[in-house]
Length: 192
Image 1 (tube, helix red, strand yellow):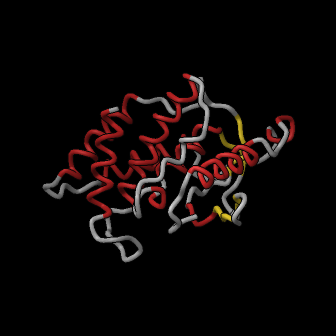
Image 2: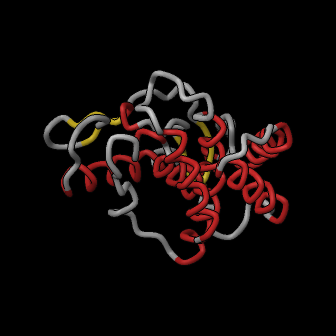
Image 3: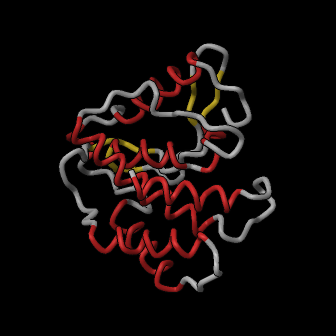
């Protein structure tokens, strides 16, 4: 779906495919499935390390890193309210979601495993592919209760911070200015 102009049918198809994937493994079986890589606790620890090693650049990125580190210091990322168990693909790249003209098919399960729905939705919403070519509201067709919405918001902050560090090198895969746009995304996420 990356590179497509996504309309309501695409977003609805995406929400349906992701929902079906999250519920594809029965709860009694999901309990025995290995946790997917870079789950909340591990990712938060890695982002803390990156914050600690950040070398100031004299830019708004410094503010995003310091505000992110401050937020992380007060956040306890373990299982909590809103963490509904789910089978997760472990990769929110829109290129892994294929539109066949009628429905969305998901590919690339190399990092899949046990996760929680809010974390997986946050990863999808904050993946660079969901905004670099034009903002895609991947959560537009997903219903969340209050607790799950709060967890999605927290997990989106974590994902946004992760992408801040991943994009800090301004590599050739994304348009020029992508890192600066991510800095602003982080600051908005932390302010919400």
